[in-house]
Amino acid sequence: MALSAIFFASCARVPVPAHTSDSITEFKNRADAGDTAFCRVSATVVSIADYDNGRFYLYDGEDYLKVYGMRGFRQEGIEEGDAVTLLARPHIYHGETEACDAACVSVRRGSCPGFASDVADVSWPELPETSVGDGCVFIHHPSSSGGRNYSVYYDTLARIARWVAYPLCLSDLTDGVRTDAYAYDPLIPRGSQASIGNKSFTSGSGGSFVRGHLVPSADRLGLRDNLDVFMACNIVPENSGLNSGAWASLEAYCRELAVHCDTLYVVAGTDTRGSADYVRDNAGHRVRVPAALFKAVVVFSEKNGYSGFGLYFPNKKGNPSKISPDMFMSISELEDKLGKNGYLYKNISL
Image (tube, rainbow, N blue to C red; front, side, top):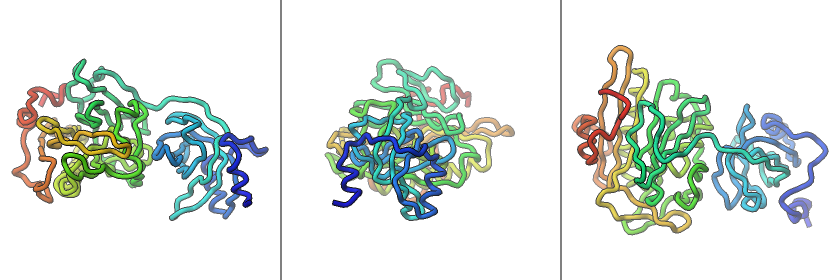
């Protein structure tokens, strides 16, 4: 029997080797030097992309590391925020260092950054109104710099967000990576979320839909913040033509605006009225298909103050490939279209 087979025939929790734990930088240096021997690495779990196969990301305050395959991951019950020590083998795959064939040495329980509550008890400019007893939970994920990454008003029965809200500035538009690490949100019970980690939605009553972002990946390219926008709370079933067409065009337009103003306050949301359609997630659960998607944007500059606009797209075939001037409406017109006067931007006087 091969040595690796003998090693992994043992239990997941393994004895601590004599040497001290590597930092992630030291672990990556081993890979760069061609050293593929098992060694220890200690860091904090920041995103879990695949519970079945033990694929997740670590951060130690200086660098990130992708763990590709950990034995007994589910049995260990590891969650985001936990501090772990792993015994793993450095491996370079497509230029990225990964920790492979990992086994757990120790776990210290922690907590995920952010918070969840029934309603928003903060007054950030981008937030729409929230209500007690409407079946939604307010969730906030901070940015890696300590500011606001994004907030979510999440419908636990529909398994999609009513809306997400976030600021967008020129400083957010940095170089970075798209992680594609689709994951559960640790602040929401998993049974109330769509399981999207391994593949997209499968057809239900309403046909085929792709995994659409409300906060786009390209708005949050810092690695930690990008991991957060691939969580299930930010993903909705979206028509593929809309996703790659007018919606993508609008996202790019917002990034162009952010270059020329101080801050954008963005709300991206779903309208489920009149829609009973659903798709299935990876676990076979029903996920509501929104009848439409909308985006509201308030632009702030020191020179011109606040101005805003909205757009509304049916979540089906037939949307144009790009946005055009005739699609734009005022914030109040968008609220009328949503059937909720005074719903958006409760903390801004437009």
